[in-house]
Image (cartoon, rainbow, N blue to C red; front, side, top):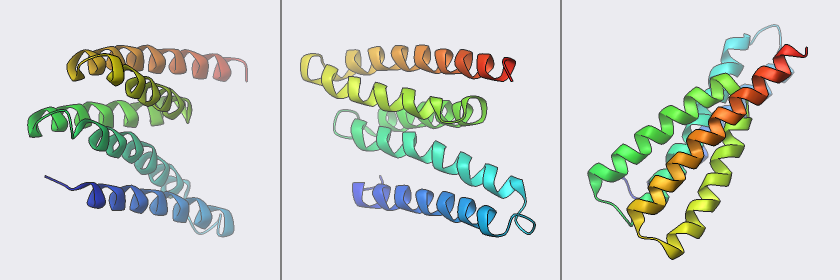
Length: 137
């Protein structure tokens, strides 16, 4: 099992990779292809939900539960990063705050279930917003 210090280090590394990719694209636009910018963005936007979910669910669930919750969060975060730009990350942050509040009043499993439903709805809404933005261009 990964400790919280190692998970935090992975999150910082993901941010660093994303920052280097963005910076390299800005200073060397002809040398660094757009794919580098895209993949560093996807790594960062996928790592944030994964690490936050891991750190938040680790005290409440066993190894299998933490792994499942983190895997679902990573897949949803990655799909949202590709489809909705940063709107998916905003939805995740709202759900993370909601989960912290719900966890005060509910047991761990119901709080996570409500959070998962709200995340699915938020990602669906983010996809609709992004689709509407692209249609109006």
